[in-house]
Structures are given as C-alpha cells and as structure tokens.
Length: 257
Image 1: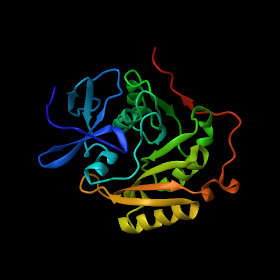
Image 2: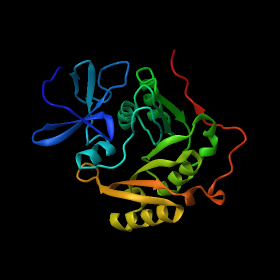
Image 3: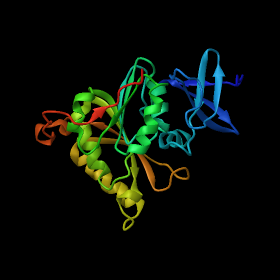
Image 4: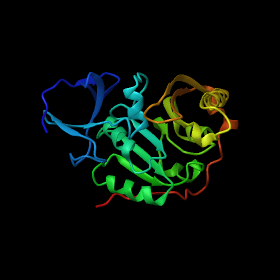
C-alpha cells in the first residue's frame, strides 16, 4: 500500500523512519528483505521504491523503547551486530533492516523450535546469519562471529548480565555499543524491578561497562528495561577474558540455496 504522509529518516540510524499515527510517533524500518512482505503481521507501506515495515512496540522491546522516546545508539547501515536470544526473528528482522545489505546480523538462539522459524528468515534476509548455540558459551561459536559494532541481548535468564558480559569480552570492539533488554521477572520475584535494575547496573559498571541510559518499557512489556551501555578498557582486561575453545562446536546455519 502506498502512503503519501510524511516519513522522516532518523539521523542516528538512516534506515529508520518516523511518522505520526493518532498523534503519536510511529516507527518503520526500510526493508532489507528480498521479499517485501510482512515478517510477523506488521503493517507494510510503500514509499517511493522502498518498502517500510512498521515496528510494532507490543511485539518488540526495541520497538517499545522507540515508542517511549529512546534516543540513544541504534544499529546503522553496514555495521555488524550480535543478537543474543533472537527467538523467531521479530526484532532481529528490524535490526537486519537497519544494518542493510552491507551489514550483518549474527542471530543466536538456543531453542530448537524458534530457531527453526528463524531459519526461514534467511531466504528473505541474506544479511541475517542464524547461529544455533548457547549464549553462555561464546567460545563455542567464536569461529562463526567476527568482531561486531554492537551487542543486543534479550535473554530470559537469571544470569542475563553475566551472559552479556561474557559475549561482550569476546566480540566487541572498544568503540562498540551494548543494548541489554533487562528482564527483571527472570531475576526472581523476591525483589522489586527497580532493585534488580540497580543490581544489574552495578554488575555492569563493576565489569567495565559504562551505563549510558536506562528506559522502562511499560506498558508494552512489564518489568522490562532497556539498558544502553558502552564498553571501557576495564571490560577487556586479560584476566576477564574466557579462554577460547580449540574447536567451536556451535554451528552456523547454512543459507538455503
């Protein structure tokens, strides 16, 4: 469907567009897919020769952050990103849009059923590289992932901060960015979400991650925060790096031919 209303490119991520719907900001990504159709039922519109996909905040934590006014770092064209906990690829497809044809998104998932659905995206997104593996063991897929410009983590585990840090030490460049979807419900119900957030922030900073911003994602996603960070030199000190395995065991899925 072709629409005449105004779509403005977001300068910090040029393949992201903002418009107004019902007097509220709405965000669309320019599709990098070989197939211009929807990925998860989102609305698709034509804008000139480009196809734009609506980033539904109720279906994506990063989409929710944008809807709530997130203004920090986002993936940009030609960058490489690592996504921990990619599931079926809802948010991953939008990040693949943002990095475009010249970029790459390594999408890690450990559960077989969502990974099977993630594989189906590869036919449409050549820049999306799915990996079947356990995010707790980055050394097992280190041979499949090159240095990346950013790390996005969305993992429902009590040790989600430790998992993120282990991967950041292996794959991030010092100038890279970290986006952590903090799921406080996965950290236990004994403490309040704000207390879990304080603990996570302390763990990140003690490990050498500068916390740049924190944004609550309610009402779209309860007990969730998006934590944006930047690595410091302390994160990469030799004593903090895990020893790499001699032979990676995680297998990157081959693209269908």
